[in-house]
Image (cartoon, rainbow over all chains, first blue to last red; front, side, top):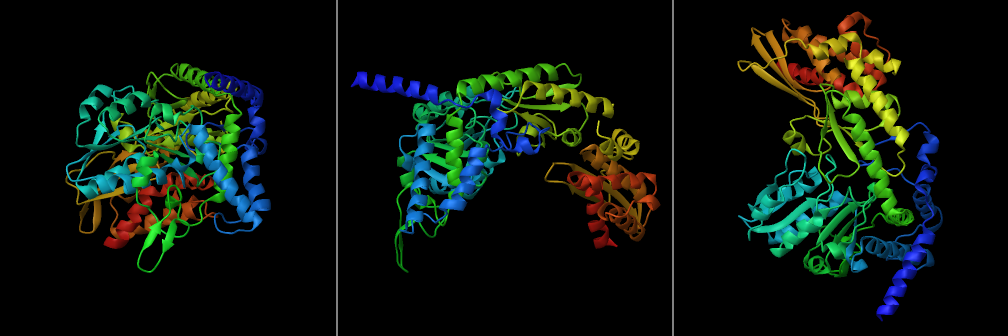
Length: 422
Length: 143
């Protein structure tokens, strides 16, 4: 038996090796946007990634040749559409190493996923005086749903503090984990600081007190391998559009035992077993959380995006991103008056900074005129901006198609802007 | 560096951004008006002292980009000393230049005209009009 497993694993690795077909040096050719905008330097990947041709083709192919509603018709087109829709569920489960595909729920994105957990999982079990813990670096999407649930129940939202480098204080966090805590929700990677939180360690601490944890994987899923079973996370959320997939499709992963306890968030077609005017019996997980006609083409596009990512060598991706990030930081630190916001030891390829008194929107406008796309603003993390006492930052976020010369070009233009504003 | 963009950030805007007019809080103000752009986080407060229907003192404070800061500074400089009706007319005149594609704003004077270039950059138009939009709402209510 053991021999069989090892052989299988070896064969799997070998198979994987020969199926890695996409090399990073040619990666731009897979993204049509760069053919339409050859000079585009796209450094706003934390907002959304560009889409490979395979994803665009999968969506248009579905609408052109395979369009039908799912789970309803019994004609061949509907059967195929349903099969493809469900096959992606299995693909997502495998991609995240979830135990089974029934733990994968399609949503419109991370925001909807978190709202679903806050509303259907947390709210019914939250009482006055209870506590919910989030961190000081959360995106508004992983803050407001919990804030509202606490407000409704008379519970308290508590915040894990961070230091001036943008790292969470885990000692303090451990002290906060009392019997009053009913939920912990934390981001894997901060969208405004780039900090990679030690979610394995955090989950272990939380589970020692039998508290469920949600991890917001919006910023991590594209570039970092996730093993949900090894990490033992209870809920995990991500959006397709940050994973080279389409907008309007996302995922909520939840452990089956928790999903089974949750009431539906929305009611309607396709989420029931039986309906009379007096009462309704809801479908099992996951269908009970997918009321109405869902984003079928989005699911097909998400499947193609996962196929695309599976063809990349993720270790190569991670070291490639690290190289770009380090190169940028080294160059930025040489600019007088520029300060990096968020300098955690463990950091992803997201770099936020302030440059003297020059407002990030002015920087973004000048960079935009040079075809450089970056993000300027509070990045939906106003409490983070308050902590660092800045109204906004300029943010560069890398992905697989950014080349070293783009970093040089960006820094050169940044220096010109600095000179212009004097 | 992009020439069209340099045109938007004329010396006037850069100077007002660096040394804005009447940039201070006023705890004694008759009215405090908030100009807040939720999309980008620019946030200014305008402090009025009004006597007999005339804006006797007008200052502002807060943070924002060069264009919104300069534009608010020019507004303050422009409206101080005017009664509500004249102030309202000035605001309408300014916004007619920034909102009307054909208008070049020559008759407004150099300082106000500088902002008409924001039309070329739709993403930044709100920065030029932020304080003026709020002011016009306030004056229409009070006049």
